[in-house]
Image (cartoon, rainbow, N blue to C red; front, side, top):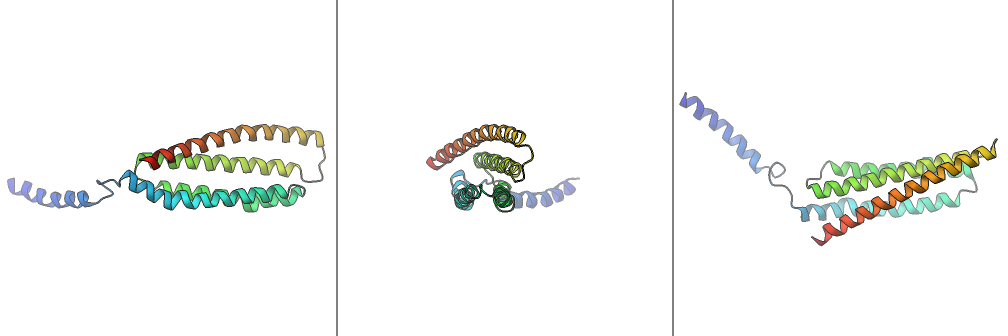
Length: 174
């Protein structure tokens, strides 16, 4: 019996030793190091994409006189670009170790989802204004309702942006 117990221990002990040497299993990456990696691999590239998104939003605005062209642009260019940006943040979530960085990234994902929702609503509003418009009064009322929802959504986007920036600053100070 002792011999079986000893042999079993000799098999199990190396397995635990290997697991103990695996840094992802036991030695969690340091918060400071992970934040620096997150800053380089997620924050900076997504900030560049945010600038491009703003430029694309500006281009969309200049196209509003031609509602059909603006609608096509927001659906074919802007919305897919924001969705791709959100997907990048979601992909990053899987590799994050520290809870603080995971929570930070969740805020970013929420912000990007809200932004995507905002552009989707804007596209719907734009589509309603593509000529010919049969019932201008009904379209105007629907547009007003969507616009009110967009303003509420923008407030939520602003709140999540502020929370994200606050947490980034806190992590940068550590």
